[in-house]
Image (cartoon, rainbow, N blue to C red):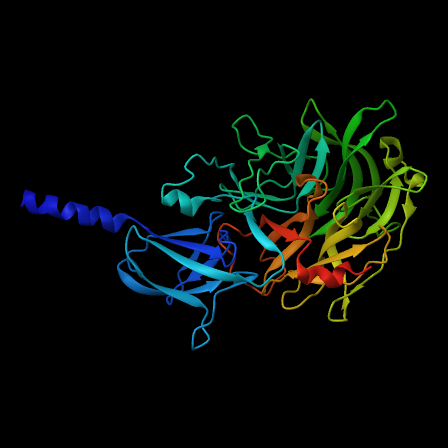
Length: 452
């Protein structure tokens, strides 16, 4: 009996090994994260940042299995019945490959925040040195270069221990240009500000009811020449109602934001908030060489002289009037909702990536690209670069600091979430997290946006 048990041992060990499926982009061979493989009994597997899933379900191993292949911007070829997918004889320990076509102009590099970024690979013995941060979800990034580092700030943050996580902003630092390559797999090590137990903590616990949201995050010199890390803050009460706006400054010793000025409080006398410093700021110099700070989300709505003192003085702010919509390549109006602008040396123009307001097929998941000779426009033809089917991708943020000055590569990220969509199933691990994309500005499909 012992001899028979020893003979059976290799089979038992083999059966315990997952099958490996790799998903790559046709033409480049790049791994594709955020690809859902769905079985005929609706078990869902999601590729990690390596484009890998580990199939360990006992009812699937050793069997011929069909997988529907679904992914925003990527498609598997159709079979004779119109199904997009692949079928494998799933043997334990074996590797299987799926090649998908990229339909979107933007290329997905991977997920930046959240848990299990390499979870599927780790099941297969790879990337075991990847360190989990304790963050499970993060909303709407803000970035600024400060003290020789890239500072990152996010809004509401999900953690493992309770659905209501951190609601006073979380923050981290990296190198200013933290990516060694602009190809997947994406590995971005974020150094979070933590509490005494090495867990991420809030950095904007500004007094007042409800969460604190940070926006308009940037650095400015004060009159002594000292660099100051500044932002606007918004206090929120249920359901999502802003009731106070103010300005805050980073305290280096305490490693947190402190309020320095209240700009608006909701009341019967002042029920509607004025234009305030929000969104992703951008710097520009006028013809006389004077430096200005632009605020808008995405297109600039007002500007102020780029000093710490003027930022605090609303009398120096000048209101701008951006166009309400852009014309698309299909000759229809596209209304921007959120996004960012930056000057691009490769194009020698200002560029923007923005989410459309009430787009199709997704209400808040259609992402566009456009260019202009001036920050105030007019902005030219908009070209759609990314689309989602009943899912949201909001507050896209450009990362011009990450790439060399004259590079044709433009990077951006945004919040991938089921919020504001029509009751979709949340995507495991990716839900309510930041996903980064690459846009190649020499891509022929962008030509309509690049006309003078």
